[in-house]
Every structure is written in C-alpha cells, then in structure tokens.
Image 1: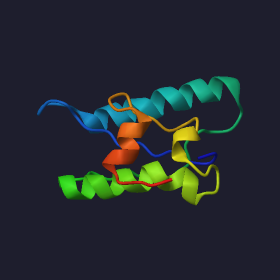
Image 2 (image 1 turned 180 degrees about the vertical axis):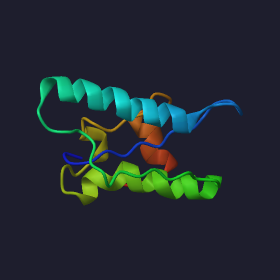
Image 3 (image 1 turned 45 degrees about the vertical axis):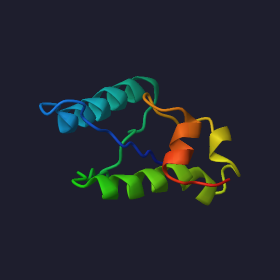
Image 4 (image 1 turned 90 degrees about the vertical axis):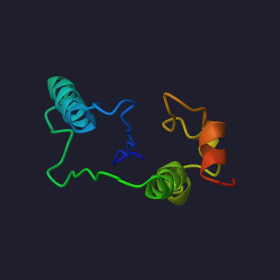
Length: 101
C-alpha cells in the first residue's frame, strides 16, 4: 500500500522476541528514511497487535493479502510487487487464505 504497511510476523521458537524485532525494524527503517528525507517515516498513530489464536491469524493474513485488491491497486494480488513472504510463495499465500482472483 502506498501510504501504510502491514506485517504479519511469527516467532519460530518459544523464546522469539517478535516485539523487539518489530521495534528494531521501526527504529532502523525510520533512521534510514530520515537520512534521505526531511519527513518522518512512521507516524504517531502506529500500533501493533499481538495475535494469540491461529484462527485469528488466518483472518489477519487474509486481510493483508487481499488489501491491495480492495484498495484498487491491482486486480490480482499475485501481480502486486510489494506483497510476499520469506517463507511462502505468493501462490501459497493466496491459496492458504482461500483468496480468489
């Protein structure tokens, strides 16, 4: 999305520090952006939400994957250049959330 970002992160071990990871992500990307631009990257209204149930995770994943289509940025999410996963292909993501083009 041109004006916001959705990330769904999952720790791979019980001692994963997802909250620390997201805080570092915001800090580092905000700093890098500030070196090149005069404005801030992250606005004050930012918030994160911790999901506790697998069923809810699927609902959030479905929302994120379909967001560019709902926003009118593409007709097929597989063609949107800024969607993806480090673990799954876009076809796997689309199938996993039962998204249909």
